[in-house]
Image (cartoon, rainbow over all chains, first blue to last red; front, side, top):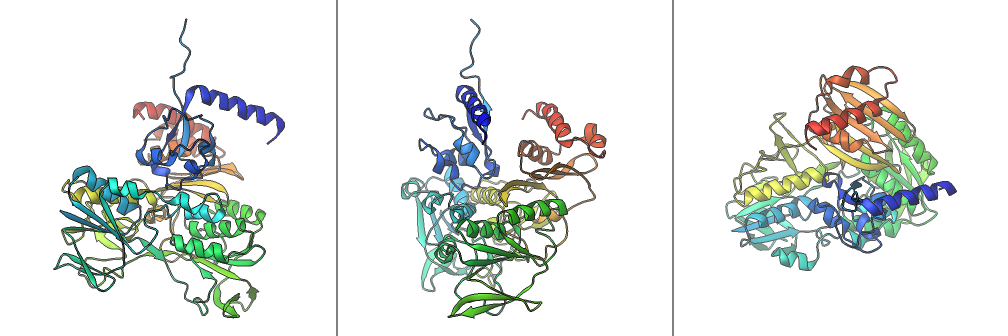
Length: 88
Length: 436
């Protein structure tokens, strides 16, 4: 990764942190568990994929580790308006 | 009611969950000769590469089984005694059933060349196979991989990751010729070479040579020999039919079942790789070796076993895999004919992918980002997406949903058409219409 891309990826991560959640597509998932294995805080992402539920875990950092590591493109970030700034 | 499920793969587990969603009281027993029980078989590929540990592949704990009131028996079913409504276990004890699900899966077609039984000749069906490969895969030694489809590449990648020098033998002139087109095969082969794999085309293995009672090399039809320490093969799979032969259950290439996954015995169902399921849309019975159809079939079988009449509707076959490190999605019908490297079908394969009606091919992409569309009269029939997967989810939905692409069809077929942009724009409108 080049120097400039480090910042690009960081900028993207902040956006995700603010307004995204990880959503699985269970039809692509083979339950290999690379997502859960790599989650830094130990969320069982795989179980969410089995149940077809977004990762709404309160401790999810939306760090993107599971999304990036999944070899089958099961997980994606979906924007939520949960943290959207309301007009004053 | 006593439900018995033979097999501990995803079809079996999906059936257990479906039964429990309807019947909380009945007895549910799963019998499997695999001592490892229920784990992610496709995940074995990532265990081989070292991307995860074996313990991460197990999908249910003892507590989970207890909560589901599921009894697991590690035993070999030696006979199905239909008139007695019972199974014979390990040639001695009996296990009665009211409703039975056969979900025993498929296994690798055996390599039939002299020396194929030597120590050091390996396949990848189960957890024990993966553990055996890891025991034998020694850094710096040489491995030969023979076969085709996804499993052959999983073996190649796993052995490479373990530091072995890998030679990959192909019988024909390119990789996975009946699913991928020449360009796609070329992309995969180029990447394999870059990773250090030596490819041998038109290479027919005729024998495995012995050295000190183990694999010492291979012999090719043209007389060449190659010293090696390990031979890994993936020349196709076949449904495990030993148990159902001579039971009077209707068989073709798999166990024949109707759209409710019921066999010709109303108390016996079959699901997953072993089942040849009737597809009401095409009017044919087809084999699949894919995780998600196995899950859906197991679920449908479980509901029907518990008395809830439900039909299995085969969706457009679809698989995502990694080919030489490149995420690849294969949707719908994309190829045709036979692959010389695989007998029957390969694991992670569906017969529908070769069931190609007259279709026009539009193509775009370069090296690692590649997309191929198969365009029917009004709809997309199939797609292959390699590398960037942004459009694979929309394409999957559009093929499965039979999206009418008439507004962009002509544009898609123009030479050098920007097909990714056309598809992306079309998708944005279509998803609103169908409220996806």
